[in-house]
Every structure is written in C-alpha cells, then in structure tokens.
Length: 314
Image 1 (cartoon, rainbow, N blue to C red):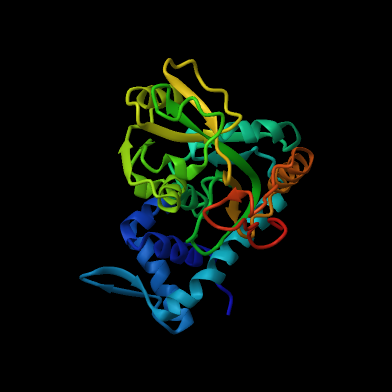
Image 2: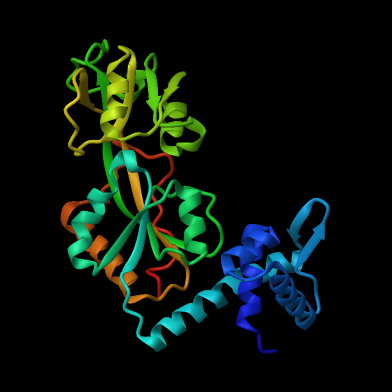
C-alpha cells in the first residue's frame, strides 16, 4: 500500500489537535478537504482512526498505534524534501524559561552553530506544539516529563542557582545558605507555581510552604518584587548579571546546590544539518566549561539528568 503524504499529514495534525477545524486551519485547507483526506486514509487502511461524536474527536486504538510511525513518516518526508532542494534557511530555535536567561547559553555556542533565528516560546507545551507542527526546528529550555511522542531531547547544561532575597531578609547577610534554611520564607514566583515545574519541585523538596506570584515583566521588575517584602526570595542562575535593583541580595545555595537543567529539544527524524551543528557546538562548550558536572551527594535536581534518546537528530 502506498500512503498519500497529504492524507498522513492530515491525520497527524488532527491527532495533535483533536479538533477538525483547528487541524484544517494549521494546514491551510478547508475542514471538508481535511475530512475527505482522513476518510480516504481510513478506507485504504480498512479501519477507523478517529471516534467522532458529541464528546469531540478521539483516537481509536488503531489511531493510537498509527500515530507514532505516521509522525516519523511526515518528518522523513520533510527531511527528504529539504535535502532534495538544498534547503539552507537558518535554524529556527525557540527558548523558554526567560527569567533564567536562556539566550546566554545560545550566545556561547551561536558562533559555531551556524545561522540561527531565535524566537520566544511561552513555555514547554508551547514549544513542543511548535516543534510537532514544524513551525520551529529546535527549542532550548528545561525539559520534564511527560513529553509528546515524536520528540527527542539532549541535556546540554546544568546550571547552579542562587537565592535572591530582600536585603531585609533575616538570612540576607549569610555567606551561603542551605535550601532548607528558606523553609520559613516566601517563594516569589513569576506566575502560577503549578506551571513552573522547577520552582514547584524546589518548594516541595525543601518544605517551602508559602508562595506569592508576580507577572513576568522581566528580571528587574521581578527582583523589585523580591525587595518589597522582607521574607521573599526566589532563584536565579548563579552567573546571571543582575540588574541594579535596590534592596536585593544574591546568596549562594549549597548542601545541596540546586541545578537548573537546560536541554535542546527537536522533532525526531529532523535531519537538518544545522541541528547537528547546534548539538555539536553545545557538546563542545559543555566539555570546555564543565556544563554537565553533577554530583548527587552535592547537587540537587528535580529528577536525575537524562540526555534523551539517541545520539542526535539523524
């Protein structure tokens, strides 16, 4: 059986959106045309891929089995077209976790990674959706499970974080702090804690009971919020240059030192040469600057470091 790529692509988009109208919009076709493609694919396969009813659209068991290889087929077709036409556009890379300054990491490898076009993803779910839709080629940020099928990732940097406290905080004069010494403090977060996995896990692990939230309008605004209340603190990478905000002090954390994990994420089967160059540049920088050092007796991570499946995108 020869599969029609337009039909397979229509299936994959609909499986990701679970909504015929939205899927049709992402493909720039009518909903009627999308429905016809999927109906033809189901006819050729001899089985239904979707359950359609009053409760919306759901994958059948056959649809769930078909989805992973269908994604790989679409990715392979895209890579084949790019190879045939000699596609040389810049690599499109989104970042998230903006309070932790992801651009610093990319800036250190950009010269060796080829031409990059950088975007600003809102969060991990937004980045994974953009990758699966083919809107971007790669993304940099903190990866945590569960991830959608069809994506691969590689750990590229483990970055120590410091506590930033109000200068009036009772612990502000300490040369270093253990994370559990912050138990009676208020964790200041740039949004709802249930959407900020790293801060959420830190609070759970070290018994931080009180939290307060802000709107993420940049690091200076965020730190000004820390300064306003003597019991507030938050976490930022140890080597991030802090803006000049009156009333804030940065204190190293130790025993254990929390580490923020940066990973590159891409769609499995994406064979773009620029992606290999970016991964290679990150690996070289990690080796030169000890980016991946981790000692479980000294450091803390929400989960053990995982490099992700496979050696690279090819």
